[in-house]
Image (cartoon, rainbow, N blue to C red; front, side, top):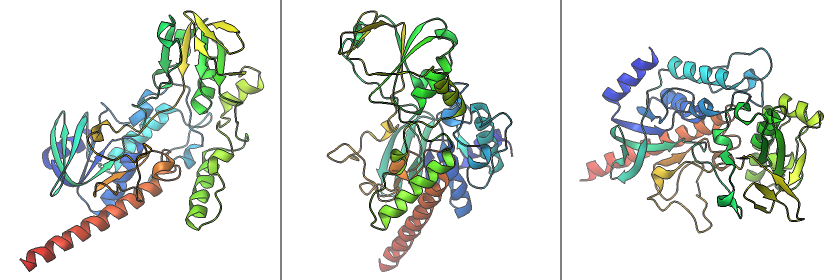
Length: 375
């Protein structure tokens, strides 16, 4: 079946389903794989124009932390690549093939505006009509919700500013003075990508924390999983991946670092009209600023619900919301499971989520049957 055929079938018969998955990136597809195996009816609503999720929007030089054989979704190995770890185009092709191989009912582009609990589950209001489902899994990720810090003088700065979510490569910055802000992987990779085309000033709080050069995504997932098991057993918190460092030394980053092109600077104090100034009074003229300052979960379609605790976090029981029965989350990082924001890590979270859904739906069906007999 072609991808177009899967979409057409979904439009025709999936307006009511056991499960609606919001988001058709890697997490949504992994959940779909296990929903298919569980025999549940489902639809995947994706707001993109084509397969690939957030990978369709990253910069060309971005590569996975691990080789292809260690970067696969459940049931289908990612084909190997030559010339290092897979790039974004390779991942996009893999996700498109995965979607078609398992005939996953993805409908796109569909933007979910609101999720409304009902007596029978949920009603999803979208720009392409309404869907009804007994359970909802949110796999919208974070890419569409970039976090921008506020710094004094920012509005008066006359140079350009962009978030790492919109970075597409060094071409437009050739010969410019560029400030890259952030202390994790995106900042280091973008600074390395720009280093030979622009004058780069890399600002972060504290010193960069590189992981050992031989550590890649496989080890990160192992350490994260080990921490979860230890905490569940009541053992002391090892700190997990955070204890290893913040930056994976992928080849381009290692090469730039070893060549002396990644020089860290402390965070500046405020903007001037033409640049920035540090608290010691030193200044620098800047043409452009790239904020590699992270993301937040993209959950605007749930903003009408009282999901957050007093400290602003959203508490989960596994991956389920204890406040709204039938509402689940997958693929947002350690919040929803160790490594669940990665290709290699999302499978275990997806499997557990579908297992919980299947159990909850079976219990609800049984309870309804008992109630009907009692009447």
